[in-house]
Amino acid sequence: MKRVFIISITLVALLFASCERAEDQPNWKVARFTVTGSSWYYTDNENGNNYHFYKFHVPWITEWIYNNGIANMYIEYHNKDNTHSMAPLPAVRHLSETVNGKKVYFTETIDYEYSPGEVVFYVTISDFVKQNPGTIDFVLKMIW
Image (cartoon, rainbow, N blue to C red; front, side, top):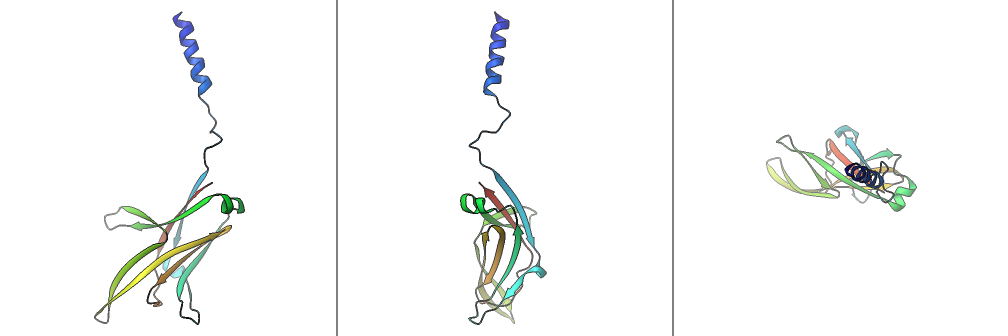
């Protein structure tokens, strides 16, 4: 009797256990991008709307994912205490620095746009100074 019970429990466990993923589970992909300080492109139009940008070729953002999935982008900060943190884009920071002995205040906005096959990152500084944004690490998280 004990043997029949153990076999029955084992069969039930095998019936309900599966090696396959359920059909309704989402797919996902995480990718990291680094734009080095010297890689940024600078654009300056006649209206004074200046910004830096960099375009990545991203073949896994397909037409289907573009229309049916979600692609979220984050900036990854490397903190002074050797930890890391992420902030979703757009990231808006109010900053200051000293120029010629005077405190200058400005806002830095980092944002992005994506389309099938590419991601473009933008850095805009509120006073439109042609200052290189430096190296920035980005993380793309996609679900479809």
